[in-house]
Length: 568
Ligand code: AMP
Image 1 (cartoon, rainbow, N blue to C red):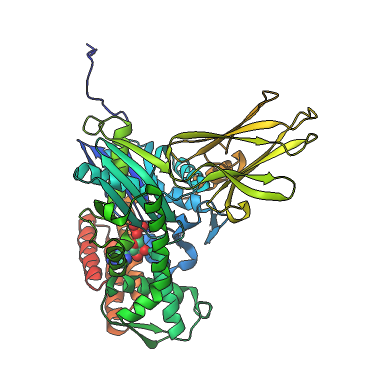
Image 2: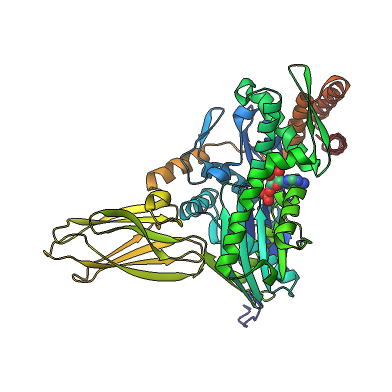
């Protein structure tokens, strides 16, 4: 007999998933049994490096194995592509060419597979986090990347807001909080207020081009300068290897002095570093951290003293220099007991549960803001053109809909051009063009008035409606509502390109990853250590040839641990 009774607790037909698609690492979490849980990848790790590599047999590798190949095969591998979402940049990896969103789709596809393996069912939708300061275009490209990976985006959530959500679930005592989120490629500052069940975002600011990768790059450039070398002088492999070593140095150097040793073409080199030198190298980057903080506080009409707490999110907040700066700016130590690497994914899964009105969470209500001013190009009289007329001001609570009245410039005008910009500068030439379109005008022999309405939704996507008052003519322009902002042809081309790819089988990924790590370690080592690693490589290949699953697994674990100990 069929059960026709009503249930008070919703059963979720589809799993409630949250994804942190990071510049450096990506994570996926699921809401299960009243809490957000991280899902491990095929290697048993929750952090999947956002790196893609084309293997020697042409198959696609994502994650740890691809990260190792970034050093050994830099021309077949790509990282940090999130920084170029929405740009025209193309990546040539071996015989393939990719857009940043296609590479992101491969990372999302890999996370989707991990979730499917863990849950034992197909996965088709998720909440995905994006930097708060991501533009409309970058958001659309993220939605597009998800679609290419076969995932419907239930909602885009701003990363610091996701972190705040996870904190809100754990700690219900905060009131006014500033979330300082310095990831691999982006920096976001968000001021919010917990008045549970409400989490209200008051201001979000940031810098889309500031993150841990820039600190690595600054260190690399300083090192090359001191060695009288230029990046172009190095072979791609040597440069990738040096970058890798400098990245490790950045994570280990802390506040102490250090001698960095590296060898190129058999020639050993040394680089002396101390705290003073580090401060000098990073001073320009650290200075860039201040402006968004000051702006966020000003927009939220708060002084640093009025904040009840300070939360650090993102891997780069592990840097002592960043922590010191934050402590100095706010006159207190930040609160950081949740893991800054995983908190965004957990918050995104919590948001998925909110959307699905899961019992354990449906009380929490989240409001967010539009982080930048959106407006149109306008003219004042005939002489002053290219002025920026704001319609939605930055840090307006979303969803929002605002309207402004404009006029045609002269009675015989044949069309009006609506050019949408985002930014904070008085002239459009200094702001970012979001989109522009033309509307034909029916000539009336008079100046015509038009209302331009901007509607900004919870995902941070914009819609423009234009109404001509005299004629009643209406024109709706969803700054391309085909959620990607890409024409159908470009979309189809991406789909076809990805469909043809051979993805490396998930079950053999642990072995492939160890081989890639061994090859990288061999390349980076010298002398006795190199010989030892060469022996391990041979031994592991021999065990693989034997095809004994238990023996392969035992050897893999032992060698992975040995590589960890040698810090490769
Ligand atoms: P996320 O995007 O949040 O995963 O942050 C990644 C960034 O954090 C990368 O630039 C890493 O180099 C950086 N990072 C991670 N751990 C550390 C550490 N211990 N010290 C310095 N930077 C780190």
